Length: 47
Image (cartoon, rainbow, N blue to C red; front, top):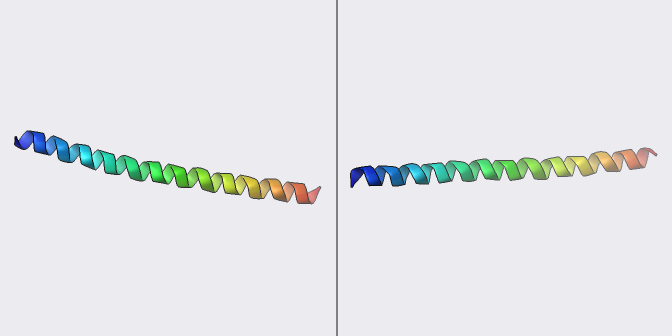
């Protein structure tokens, strides 16, 4: 029973870790898209 509980805790820890990694990835992608739009606008204005 203790081993099953340990496995469950490990799975919960992995899920929490994966969620933070996923949130970080989403934040990075949204920031990159924003930066891309800003660069495109700057290029258009310079024409």
